[in-house]
Image 1 (cartoon, rainbow, N blue to C red):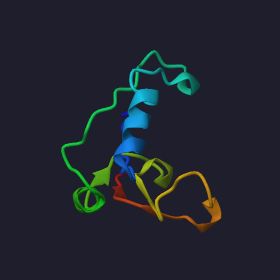
Image 2 (cartoon, rainbow, N blue to C red; image 1 turned 90 degrees about the horizontal axis):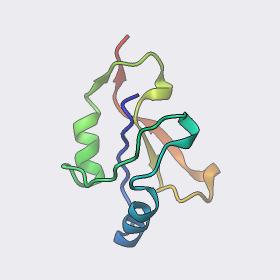
Image 3 (cartoon, rainbow, N blue to C red; image 1 turned 135 degrees about the vertical axis):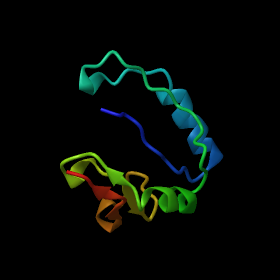
Length: 92
């Protein structure tokens, strides 16, 4: 697995708390020895990320592995009210 994600946090405090919790941690549910490394992205902001990844073709065999966007921002509550969009396209 490529093992990366882009997360647009709604506040600097949320980003910092995530960093303190997740950086240098193992992915225990994947039985992997890899450690998560949290870094700032070169592209910043939702609009720049969408513009970059929407035309991208990803080498995977299912929409389940494509990047997704959630709106409104997802905080774990009101899951029924959150819409999800796939970003990018499949390459078989």
